[in-house]
Image 1 (cartoon, one colour):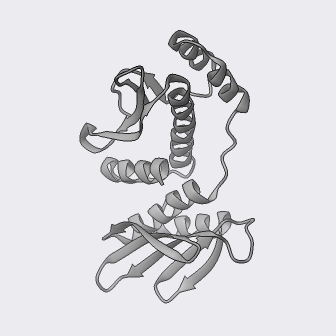
Image 2: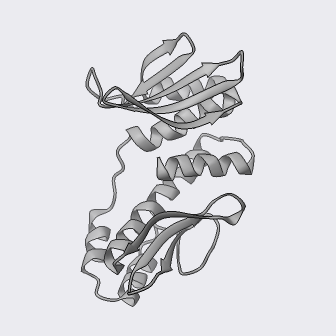
Length: 202
């Protein structure tokens, strides 16, 4: 998808509250007149500097900086999808996880749910959310980022809490891949990893 296509997606899926003077600022489409959270991209094409911000109650937090206009607008779209849209998690699945007593029970719950595919227990695999055993019956949740580096989502959780995080982020990762495939977003694998981190940890 080209730059024009990404801009059209932004305009169709979000409320564009500013698009002038080198700034694109978006809010949730069904939000109030003065939303609490917005996402802003500043575009300095003369210097090839593009900065992505999350704006919460008027306070700006820099998220990332880019040197390519297409990538920056793509990042605006992906980050906005992560931060401004509501996800509908399966509450029955979450309740089953919370009531499970053992690791084996939790593994069976995951195995029986065919919608949750992007997870693994104790194996370091790319494109998966990973449950990692820590110490003292605690668990970490992570994924593999650029060059196979570990990117931790959370650490030292009890089993049911860690399994809940594993489910939520596996679901979120599935949505990320659905989004990339649906919109036929073409970019190099390194930048796809950047987008994945923005979406998951945004």
